[in-house]
Image (cartoon, rainbow, N blue to C red; front, side, top):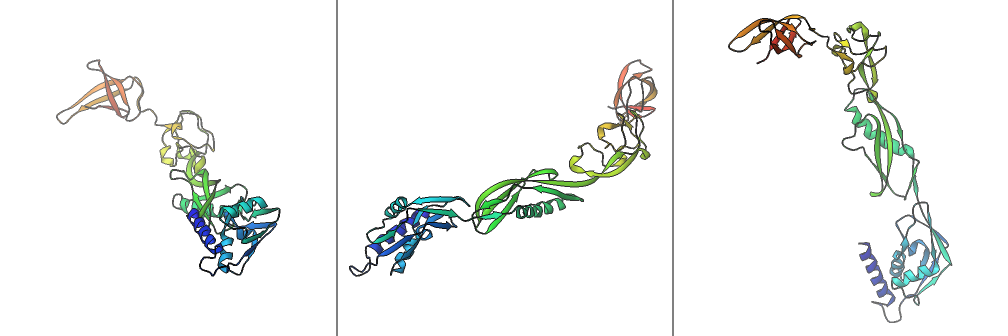
Length: 326
């Protein structure tokens, strides 16, 4: 589209300079006075940005003003244009320098205007998006802090900010945040920030020290609020998941109780006498047996049938009963 517009501009310019639609000899010459320094806002440097143009023909003035001389420098940067370069660009646009007098300086320094996106503006955008998301996930969550790079320089215009954390991002602990910056709805830059999110939850902790294989009572434990981001996945969140079980290792006060730190105590041990029950829809048999290995409720263990002296496998039902599953 830009190439097409430039073609149209050059075509109209040729017609104007050729006196198209005007009496012979009625062409109004134009005078272009280049300046030493200029500041531009857009992506292109036009002749109107770096000069003052005078002519009795307003249409010709407007056409000359729109001629693109060069691309603009980056925000807060400067580009130097020589007199020779500018004249070459005018010739490329079919400008008849006999009809358009150019009063040229030796060179022109063109700066790009810019605006600073403050860190506060980016932080506020991140807080708004993350705050809404975590409110629907956790009961007690907050953003501890947000780290963003230094303030960003962008071209002048209307700023809009888009925040993205990815679909599968876990909104806990240190969360990477993509901050996309747009000026006048045009994408300009992406930076990365980090948001630190804290979500508090009740967790089971040790109140009184426990030795290895010690049975856990309610008095040994307490519930405390801890940051979910810093908790292991196996941390117990209900006291009922620990009370009545025994420890697999020594535990000290304030320690978070994990699932691997507790186990059901053995219900039967090697040498215990038990009743073996074998039951189906058609019959139910009972006999005596001897436990051959330690087992907890629900474990499938080896049991010696005292009548046949054969080893069978049975499931621990209680401290005096095992069941053979058909």
